[in-house]
Image (tube, rainbow, N blue to C red; front, side, top):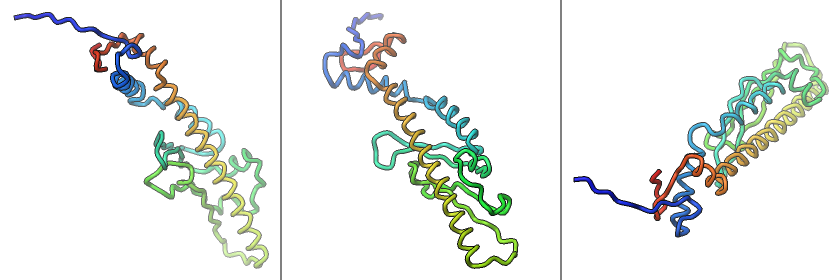
Length: 194
């Protein structure tokens, strides 16, 4: 036996109750933020980082709206290029005698304060006066600080770009447009019926 039922369908902004609207907008928001919605931001930011001297950047983020949310990255460090980018004086220690790492210091979160630059200089056995050793230590500490500041600033910029894109995608006006373009319709309770 075949029975035909007729139901009234709504666009998300025309639903009869706030609860139904919220359900519909939540469904549409999930459509807009599934998969790799952030991929183009990662691609652009990766290219920017590589130009500055951060090689093979690995970007991470969590968000949006909880304590600990943020973005950061790890990468190999091209110290000569980074010094030129930051207009930082070249260290007197040869670059090949330095081991520089951009380390993640917290594996649970992704915000800017979870990464830092660490630089160690190898001693080639050449005697060094205490004054010179102190000057070298000060020089490397200043470079570490400058690079860590740059990394954290860039991480905040990355998060801001991600956050803007995310909230633009889940904006109700955008979601109404998505529903209209894709011909998504909802029942009176806000369930998708297409």
